[in-house]
Every structure is written in structure tokens, then in C-alpha cells.
Figure 1 (cartoon, helix red, strand yellow):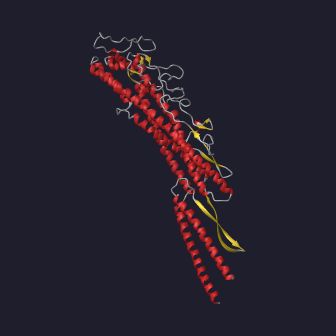
Figure 2 (figure 1 turned 90 degrees about the vertical axis):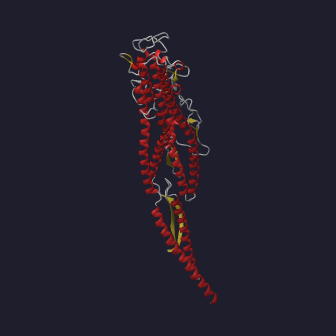
Figure 3 (figure 1 turned 90 degrees about the horizontal axis):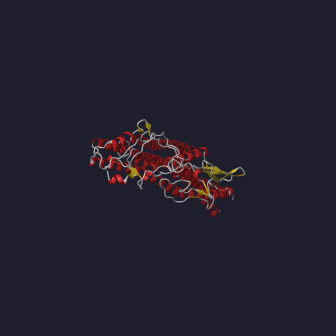
Length: 512
């Protein structure tokens, strides 16, 4: 009987070895399948040797574990948020960049303004030419349309950012709910001594999505769960039914948060300003700061241009009601927020192009403003050039009259709330304003592109470091596979030998 007992023991040992090899192969297969999954931590099947009375009795499978360099993981998640934010800015602002055009190529507002100035210069030579007068009106219409188109690009970009916030919150809530469910399963599994490595990798995958959307970090808890918190310390909800909510909104020039644009709510509290990173943080900043600042700069330029023409006796540009809007008190732009979206050539001038020579309105004149001007009456001289000279010398110039500087353009306290500032000093002429505006906004977008390239390089470096420390190494997995195959062959031979010996023993017992 001792022989039978020995065979049973050998068979049990070989069976346990093959079972352990199978478990290792299952973990290895999962590792290899996720070798290209960013943030995946390699899993390891642990085992324990079994002994009885000092004799080996096989091997028992232990828990599946994984090693995670948490500092690298934390840095990577933070960088994910930075890259995602810059990618969002780049995507949303790309149509704006296209609308800004290239200075000197004819499609930008600086070139269009230059064309209008040239039309007036040409008209000066033959002021009573109806053809040249119409050319001035046509160039003015092209210029106004260019301002409208740029304003529309801002509005569309703001709407894109708002729509992205709404859709991204749905994705965020789904990932947070997944984290909450996995937290519960991990806590339960640890309490029962079960392997939770798969669950932890699934939770990390959901956390990676959260980091891209918000730049949030995971804060490990003693029971194996994690808290999810933004860079500003806002703990995001992961419990059943908890969610961040907002509402759809139509974005238009002058739309503001807080106000006409809804906030992001959590448990009845507005947490909009506590999400400052990731793609959602980028969309919030685009919608509430970047794009409104662009719009405010363009509104100021449009209003300054219309005012400087009117100051010389030619109301060339107006709003839809045929007037040049001015500040109504409070924030400096309170009366003309969104003016760039509706600026047009005065319908009166469109109907009577000769007004670009003769003028539309009298100017009383003052020591601090423009000098006095009286429009040329219908019976006046056909070679009237007074208005054209005023436009060329003063509307396009640095002075409102000889020796009197133009009123300064507003570059601070802009927007409906007066909380926006342009990143440049007050331009002297409207020509300078056009070039400065285009340059500043184009440079802001170019800086985003440069920063994105740098951030992606850092992200790639962190991903490589994390993978080296905690990720899947295919060479290691292949080496382990060879070892397991050899071990499997050894255990299989043991089982074959046991089977042969068992057959021999049965035959001996039969004929004994």
C-alpha cells in the first residue's frame, strides 16, 4: 500500500503543478493582451509550496498581485489632464485660427481694413466718381463681413466648448460610477482574501478616463477603495446615483457664466470653478474666459472703428438699428457687447454711396475731440475732398484732430461683466488695433500648440517610465512562458510515469 500512497502523492503534486501552470498562463495571457494598454499594471500569479512532515506536497495558487509605482502613476494622471486640456484647446480654437487668417493675404480684417483705406485714397483723386464711391462701400461691406465672420467663429467655438462640457460630464459620470462599483467589489474581495488585481486594473482604466476629463487624482483608502479628487480638492462623487450635472445652453456674444450659462452642479452646489484641468476644465476656460476675451477685443475694435469714422462726419458702420453703440455705464463695453457680430455698413450709405464723399453728419467740434465739420450739401462742389481727407488723416490716424490724440481703446475691464483683459496695451490707430488683435489671438493659439507638443513629450516619457516600472514586459513574459512550458512538460512526464507505474502495479496485483 505504501507504493500506492507514493503514486497518489506524486500524482497530486503533478496535478497541483499543472493547475498552477494553468493559472500562470491565464495571467500571462491577460498581461500580453494588455501590453499596449496605457496605464495597465502587469499582474503576477503567486504560489506557495505545500509540505507535510518536511516532504513536498505540491504547490497552491496564491492571490494575483500587481506592483504599481504610485508616484509615477499619479504624475502620469496629472499629465494626462494637462495633455487632454491642451488638445481640447487646440481642437476648439482651430476654426478660430482659420478665421483669423494670415496677415497680408487679404482674408484677415487687417488686410480688409487696409483695402478700405486704399479705396478712400483712390477716391481722393476723383471724389465725385460714382464707381469709386461704390468701391469704397463694397470694401467697407467686405470689412464688416470679415468682422462678422470672425465673431461667428468665436460664437461657434464657444458653443462647441459648451456642448463638449455637457457630453463630457456624461462620460465622467459613467467612469465615476464604474469606480464606485469597483471600489465596492475590491473592498469585498480583500475582506474575503480574494485576488483583486483585475478589478484594480479595471478601476485604473476608469481613473485614467477621469484624469483626462478633469485632471483628478486617486487617493488610496485603508480599505482598498479610492477617493477621486480634483486639483482644487473637490472630491468627485462615486456613489450610486451621484452625478455632476449641467444643462444645455445656447452660446451667443454676451452669454456669461454665472448668468445665462448654467453651472456644473454637484449635490445642489455649483462646482464649475473647481474643475480647472483636463478637457472639461479646458472647455470651461475656453467658454468663460478665452473666447469671451477674443470677442471683447473684436467688439472694442469694431466699436472704435465705427466711432472714429462717425467722429469725422461719416457714419459708415452701424448696428442693425443704424446707430453706433456706446457704453451705457458700468462695464466699459456694457452698451456694445457683441457689436462685432452685427456691425454692418450704414444702410443709408449703401443706398447713397455719394455720402462717402459728402458725409452723413455734422460735427460741432471741440478742443478734445474732432474739429467742426459740415457735410457737403447736394448742391455743393463736386470736387469736395474735406471728408475724405478727414477720414484718411484722422479716422485712420493717431489723432482725432491735429495735436489731439484719439480716445484710448479699452483693453481692461472688458466683457459683459467687466472682468476680462486683453493681453496688449491700447493700440494707437485702428490699423494697429487690427494687426495687434490678430497677432495676439494667433499667438495665443500657437502657444497652445507649442505647449501641447511639450506636454505630449512629457506624457510619453512618463508612460515609458510607468511601463518600465509597473507595466508588461513582453520579453519577461516570453521568458516566463518558456519556463512554464518546461515545467508543464516535467509535470506531464511525472503524470505519464505515474500512470505507467499504476498500470504495472494493477497488473502485479491481479496476478499475485
